[in-house]
Amino acid sequence: MKQTMITLSFFTMLLSSGCDNTSTSSLNEKVNLPEQPSKPIQAQIPDWVGHYKAFIPCDACEKKLISLRLHQNKTYSLKEISFFKQKIKQKESSGTFTFDEQKSNLLQLMDNKTKQNRYFSLHDHSIEPLDQNKNQFKNFEKYQIPQVQNIEVNNALKYVDIQADLFKSEKIESNGIESTKLTYFFEINNNSDRPLKLRDSDIVLVDLKNNEHISTIENNPISPIKPHKTQHELVSFIYAESHQPAYINIK
Picture (cartoon, one colour):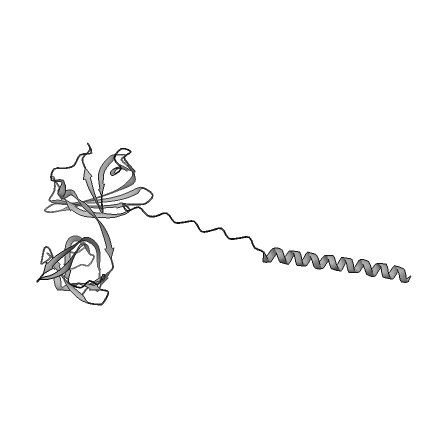
């Protein structure tokens, strides 16, 4: 009888030891997690990705505004606004584009709806429309469309939406002091029921040191913007400080 009890005790110890080993093994499996895969390196965004915007000559109208956005996935969106004396015509299109195999700076845009092709020549921070034979237009220097950069606009006006894109940056001498001249392309949408009047003193550039710089409007004074109409203007700021611009304030 005693021998039987000893034998049972021995088997009980073996079973208990086996359970402990299983538990320990399971715990080790939980602790020893597999190594996390390394994060993929993000592809660098090409320089040509961005927004291109400018006025260009127009044979059938007074002037034409081109607003072209090139996306990294090689799609585009194009807005064309033709300005006449008494009216404005706007056309929007989108599609895909490819680079020419022989000329790497030649872009072919294909409209998603019409399947028609248009051609542009890509330069450093600018783009140039070409004719259907892929040739430059006469007075091609007037067809250069720069790549623009958006800046925040703090607008205190009700029912008015204003967007500003950096059009040109240049070093000039003002009153014997080396200065910076920044020219912005303004799109002013008057959604109110009254004409909108803007003066150069109403538009101020604020730099990172909170210094204010009053604007210089190319067509000053701006003609009153009619109710529920959009107007485009070139607005410049000249300042001697080297501080970067932070935002534009509309008073």
